[in-house]
Image (cartoon, rainbow, N blue to C red; front, side, top):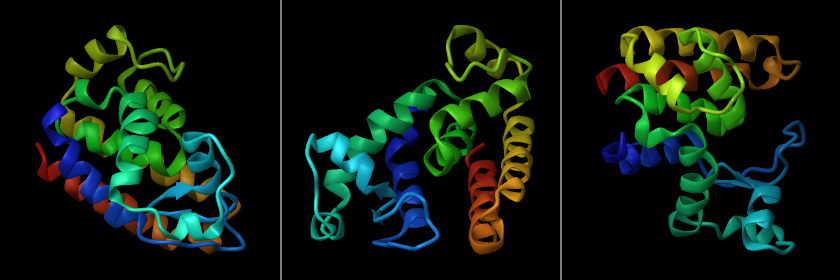
Length: 169
């Protein structure tokens, strides 16, 4: 829901944390959840590690809005479902989260949330969607080759997202 943007962005940035540059993370240098590649695409030029370390809320909020929140039709989803979908979208790509939502609601899983997907979402209980999103996300994580390295954090984040989304109902 449109009214949830600020609240969800705040929860998201809590999950994403600050600057990291983990050798096993294919995203490379990342700050507030924004990878160097994404930031370079956003600003239209190469950036330094120092630029990445200096990212702040004002620089990342419009990136999240355009690339992730708008990408999963956040404003058009019911409260709680919006958070469940966008957090997975940030963590694993908006297309993956959108397809998971579409499979859960029995819609064509094409990754483009349109009127038919939104109607199918409206026809299903938000609690059921949220719980199934959590389960599908966990199964996805457990199949990744990097689960041994990052799985504990992903599992914690997924559980927190479930709890937060259910509280939004």
